[in-house]
Image (cartoon, rainbow, N blue to C red; front, side):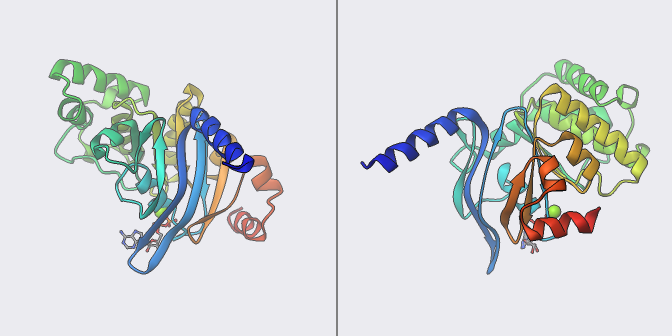
Length: 258
Ligand code: ADP
Ligand code: MG
């Protein structure tokens, strides 16, 4: 083994012990379309990574790979010692990596409380009493203690999205993924969802967030990654990405949205 190889290996080992979530050279295609083209990213425990980029750049696909809603074609993803892209059961991964989507996907025939209890009973095998207590605690955490008995149709978009967050949190995830959680909401309702997300940031939750909410990104992100055509073009601190982006494409993107 040469010196170079030794150095590379020890650096690698160091990273493995440091970063909670590690995305290593991930490729994903749909048919002929190469959607992710060698994405690598390391996210430390308690950090908030915000993903930005034009529509179609692969942001949602990357999040979907992170909790095995879709399989990568090449590359590895690790959560601590667990290989997400390995043989592990996808349900196990989805408990540890919770996801909140733009489209709020609650069961219409179940109350807010029952929507949360379902996974606790079915996936985690909790008994009804415990599941109910946990569901109510999570509803309180997102400011919806008084809506436990409400059905989705009786809730606002912002409240439904907060139930979705509570449902993911009930699984005790190590990481939370958010895919444009406020894009379908009016500004006022967006703010109540963003407030819950800021609360999670303050509690030290590790998060990967795709969002157009630049105030949130600037205030909450540990770092921002700019994706284009399935590649991370640039990554940096919020201040640097907003005020002093290196790449012309990043500059143009931030100009176009501000
Ligand atoms: P973004 O979230 O950045 O807008 P996506 O990850 O949704 O980007 O999509 C990236 C590209 O992959 C798009 O061209 C989209 O059409 C394509 N794509 C995404 N999901 C699928 C799928 N399930 N089947 C085929 N193509 C897909
Ligand atoms: Mg998307």
